[in-house]
View 1 (cartoon, rainbow, N blue to C red):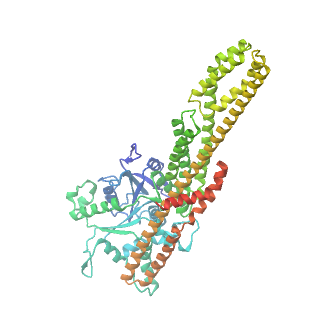
View 2 (view 1 turned 45 degrees about the vertical axis):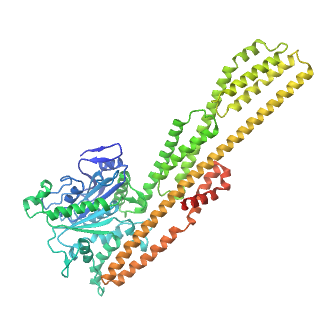
View 3 (view 1 turned 30 degrees about the vertical axis):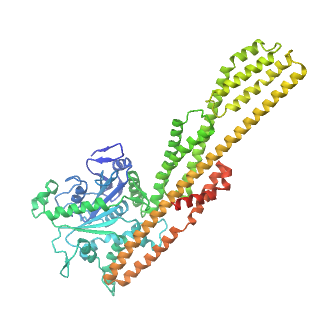
Length: 632
């Protein structure tokens, strides 16, 4: 097996590899080679997994999804071929810049293995990792077939959604579980009920019809697996396939047989199955909002198998929190790296003005915040965003200092060149002559004029000039006192004039510094506003996704409620009616606007550290940002 990586992080595997190995003692562990392959996939992944009893032809369907005749081992004997969970990553045939991850699982109920506990963990891992789960069986969907899917009944005992299990958690599973697709192989009966033709999907729903009323414990046992399947997998689909061929010799080497040698109805239904998967299998999401890439999928597999190996129930919340910690750290690192790289690339030190520096910083910070927001998720109390804000400010201060130092160095060098003649004349005593003060002043004015004509001095230009003029005051005063061409009154007048010019320069430098400090504060306001605006947009997007998810769940629950009523299970339908009411209340809570308050409470500590005057209007800024976004 080998995998090649293209420039857009698309990984194409030549053949499957084992993702989760099943050791002889029943221990499950992630294959490092498979995890390495997944770590190179940065595209969103659509994860399609198949489970079912051993020797039911699961691998054939997965090879078809991969667009290949061979790949996953089909085998040709009664021995179960696939051990553990095997993975094949291929470019998604219809979704651009997406990767299709196919998972072929070890056959359940293998008599040679005889480990039912191991089977349930294989089943649970399939549910946890996939966005579409195919259950493959042979014959018909009768009570025996449903009872063989007993793993569904054990899900609530083996999987936890939240770290603290609660009584209502069973109803929550449907929010997180994949679409369920039942493929029935080698079907030989007519698709009809009471003489009326039915569709594949109607066949499945008829098979899941409850026995009403439940009068005895036997009735409850009969209904329980059906209730679980309906509750946990509200999105269901069925494909009924006839036998591919009646020729046993062809049947044993399907990977070598062309479609024209197989039953046309089988080929057509197999294509419908593939088309459905390509169209309706969703991207794998974390926590309902965050699209997972290959690297995240590998981490999820690692977390879940480690929990199982340590004797714990895999917990979705804990796994997602662990992943979010890693992703958010990486998001801060990438965003900060982008800010620093772009600033070094775009800023030519020294900048002419403070505004020029702050404008470039704003542009780079906006890009950095976008990078962070795109990658981060589950940032509780905005801890990582605060870290990024502080880190960018620290880096900005370093670059500001570099900008100042570059300006000072440039100005000192410029003055050094402009004052060569002046310094030589002072050393030679050329100004200690009658009329020398006037010559000194003219030379100084010439130097200042040439200095001010230079437009690339940077933000410390006036400050360096003031320091230079201050350094020459003593020399100028000595020359003035010794100038015999001036009387005492004229000398006093010149001294007062020099003092006034010095004070004027001092005020100018002070005003420039105050203006630059204000520009820095404005930059901090812009920084805060960028963070608030993007955070509000992200939270609004998440609210919208929550509403969409709730509406989808309500629609699914209502469909199930109506179906149960039509099938005569009014009592069971009431359970779904209660769940719909709970979801409607949840939707109302999502629509409330009080959610913005924690934003300011969490971020205000950063504003106090970075720019204290932001504190006075930060909460108002948050409200305005929210209002602006909601009015779009």
